[in-house]
Image (cartoon, rainbow, N blue to C red; front, side, top):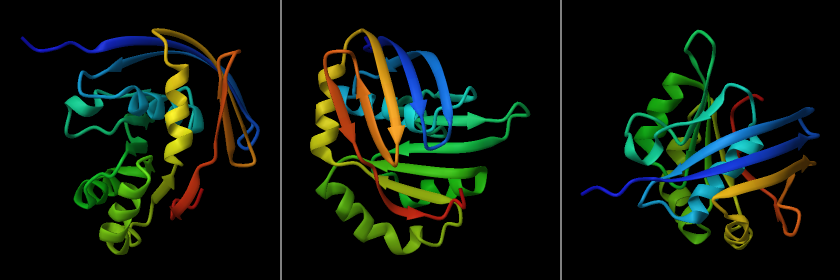
Length: 183
């Protein structure tokens, strides 16, 4: 018998001073049985960082032809494709052809560095790819916010991100490894 996804609800108030985006989002996150709390919270972080009414979570781990998040226009075109971890170079090349903006968010520390050493030369040729790195210690702190029902506040200012639940606040500073998005 296959294990079912665990459902988490998050009410997130986002104040993004960098993009002048201020909104509240009621989100449902389905955590795949093979997904960790850390990875799920990085998905939530990615949503906050690129928040938009059209940005949505996909089937992710259970589907090969979808990213972790994507933003589709009202006409169905893929405006933004967001992958987590260290995706295959071929997958990012295909995504680059399908979407206007492709983002990869690395959160594995040394494994992310090794992935970049192996793939960086070919990935630098992709005209619309952004690669962001998160500090693995900061990311681990996100798991302290995990609850089946979360009420979170996210503030983004000057490239720094603060996510909190009223008792605990986690600060994350994404490092840009590559930004060829033109945005």
